[in-house]
Length: 276
Ligand SMILES: C[S@@+](CC[C@H](N)C(=O)[O-])C[C@H]1O[C@@H](n2cnc3c(N)ncnc32)[C@H](O)[C@@H]1O
Image (cartoon, rainbow, N blue to C red; front, side, top):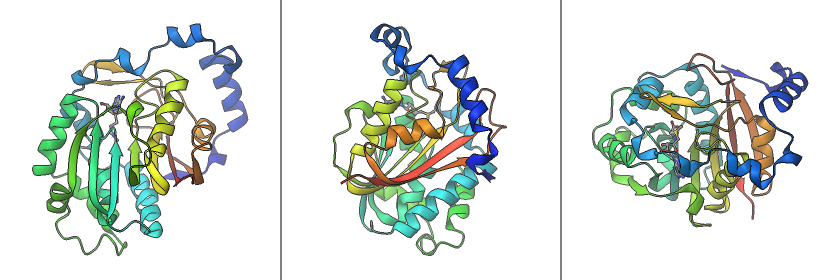
């Protein structure tokens, strides 16, 4: 279920968060940044794709239903992008961001740093797990662009291409539309890398290109198959600040989520267009 920003006590939330979990940004010296754990400090090739998939996408939950509604409605109403070149950045063990773009995309790049996730993606686009039908049925319902696609996974297998890559090295101006789900804030503890990853994603789009991005809200990190992975604690204000220099028409919505694991406080979805 979605909740509006107002359902959080924002002022007290920010006071608590800035004083307890994050230092004053004015003290964000080079030495502070160097001490934190960055994206390159983690062994992404040890990411257990099967465990991640099972925990997160083995069945469709209410938070993902709400994200699908926001993102599919956005791309559906945008529709300037038929035949688009699309990218899902940090695709991981998740097919549903790519599925939201499928009706509009002639090609979908599944862009991923981890070897394990690239192998998983290659397998899944040939032989998808049954739970992906739950995700497709939810986005398909009542949206005319999705309805005519009778076999989305056959289409995905023909349109999707798995590509090895690093979000920080994406080439600017390449794609007409893009998704980035739970990546910029979930690959580093460093705020500067969160901002750089978010902006690199949006900059990989052509001017006015459409994007949808999802973020864990106020996350303190996560475990996959017994290994720990980092997070940068962000809220709606951080997401807006990261997007504003590179994006227009930005809409940020909060999605209620509490049962996935400990150590987070909902999810955030941002939609918009790359600045011209
Ligand atoms: C929390 S997972 C999110 C996966 C998926 N997008 C989802 O919605 O569940 C973060 C993903 O980012 C990938 N990743 C980590 N560092 C990256 C980088 N520098 N460039 C691209 N992807 C990266 C990880 O391998 C992992 O698949």
